[in-house]
Length: 259
Image (cartoon, rainbow, N blue to C red):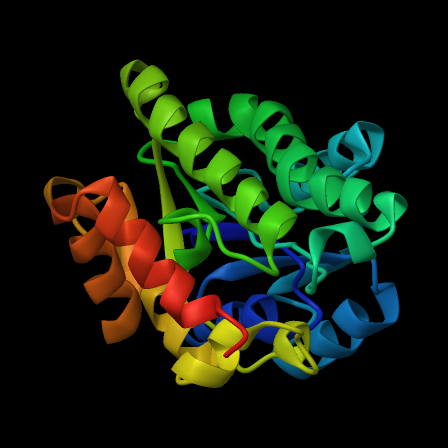
């Protein structure tokens, strides 16, 4: 029997790398794609080139998506899970961040996910029980000061996830997202945000990878659209669902204020 196959973006480091190790250890065939080609090639050598495929992919480029998925399909023959993990951020006062950097965040975090879902649809449709897992964030629960554009992109991912999960049900495709708070990766190093100082970094990449694996393998009746990672994110999600808007605003203001 052929192994199940997962295509991972942003696989060279952080959450993507941890997810690749988790799925490979369970016997999956893993597509490792990233702008850091040397990084995914090193990871492929570690995990075994017989059960991985490494390649360069700028997720903002639709043509590169087409080529990467074509190569993956030729090697694996199916697409059980697409993990849209690639993402970047910039932190600090909105007006202090160069406009070009803000645009790049949108290009990677939003356009990259749209490109991936659009290009992968035929492969997902033709694989029974296929799933898409998008990396969202707890910053998609309420807009986060000092992370305004990053937060906005994760709201966009959340909305796309909800819509496509409904739209693609007739095709047998489930779409879900994973929403962690701060994770100990290079993305949070030197982050200019008061929230990270107050809340801390209490998750590792392996914690998120475990939830991603659960989302990929749960029985269909147990599949949830949103999967929160860590007690802080779960609490924030519950509070946002129950609290009036003014209270959610006050809470987030207190977390992020400068003094």
